[in-house]
Amino acid sequence: MENSFISCQYLGWNSENLTFINCDIESEQGLCYVKGLKLVNCRLKGTTLAFEFSSDIDAEITGRVESVFNPISGRITADEIGELITEKDIVSEENTVISCGNIGKISDKPEWKR
Image 1 (cartoon, helix red, strand yellow):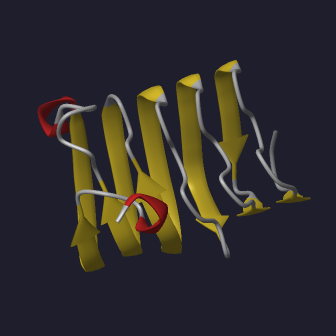
Image 2 (image 1 turned 120 degrees about the horizontal axis):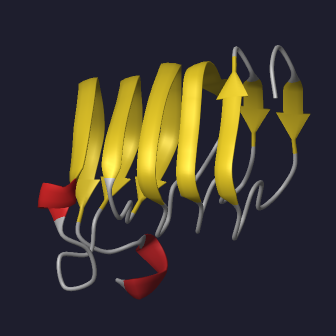
């Protein structure tokens, strides 16, 4: 999908080989359980708990992502991440490269498990 605005809950769950180019995405718990996800120059406005158990991620995000949760593998680049949540007993941080100028908070559990 290119040059689009997408607003929905659970965007892309259980999908394979999704590509978004120059898109504005608003999604509560979006882009989770995706294998082969590519984001090129996308903005994730108000997007929370993104990338849960997604693998083979290649994400170039302009601006802020509210929260990233348990990505399995790949590369995520963003200007800002509000909260990065990785449960070390569930995912291996070595499999995902996160390049970000500003991560507000790093957690090992989501709020509902604390």
